[in-house]
Image (cartoon, one colour):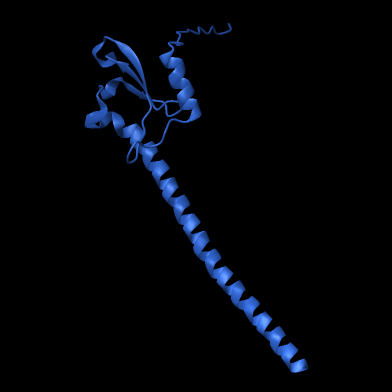
Length: 133
């Protein structure tokens, strides 16, 4: 009777050890997968940021690269269409999206900025600073 209890206890301990080892192997594989995914996302973000700055020099840009000014946030580029020629016709706010398919959708800030610009809620302001004498 005592030996059957010891065998049962030994079987339970061995089962727990095997289950623990399977868990550790799963955890290592899952952690590696998560890290790889994070690295791929980081590379995509970095490539997108580089692309945003180089887009004025690509053939599909459609504007004179000399007219473009990079902001990065909340909009990628502001284009003063015609500035290099001395005749500004319009100001274009350009958000660059990269990637396959439709790319990333506009985030909340970008949508808000788009809506304000489309509603023509844009103004000119001047700030003149005077130096104390």
